Image 1 (tube, rainbow, N blue to C red):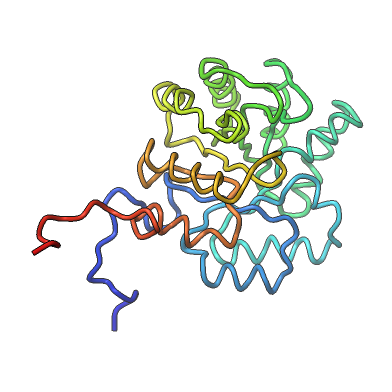
Image 2: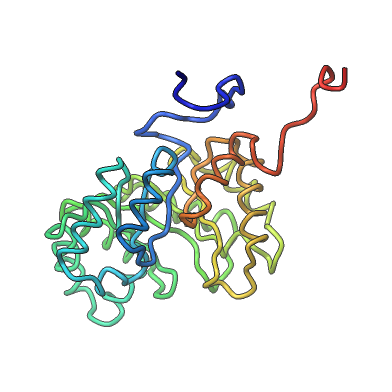
Length: 269
């Protein structure tokens, strides 16, 4: 009995298959998945999921027991949960620097080991970004830094400089805001190429767009998935994946999706 059906079909050598993965990470969004629904998703898709993002400020809406059970459920399936950056943006915007450390300590108290530091909606200068990352790290948290904005377009050099600052401050990973990668409904290929040439892609996750970005369609999200795989190969790290798209994304990485491989000459014989 084989472990997988159709094992006579090889998977691409460039795709990391064993967890914990160092590259080729897939991060899913959790907008408040019910526990049983989440368990169903993980029972099917956990081999292809590395990170689970508790989106924005949704953590505030759980009761403590359910929140901790959800974190434990992710870890049961070897998926690392973390809190998205816009929650800290909200805390910083409404309560200032005095609230940043208590926020980090509260995350630790409930079993969170990593948070995101971003400035999607609340801009940070370089000094503020570095300071916020260091507060979180000094509180005992891993930090995933995010670069880019949902509102203001930046060029590759600016995003690379932000990413390098995040790494220098101690971030383990950097996420690239998806809105930066889109010109209307077109993918900014020039920006993708600039980031590829200027960053250590093994430490970068590229975000997908979602319904919170005006004009985004299911197709534009799929086109962005294809662009990432074509530009960086099957082991590119991709973030903001809808839980119901994990298997289809993995199929895309492996050439088993609706975008298949080139036909071999012998196939015509």
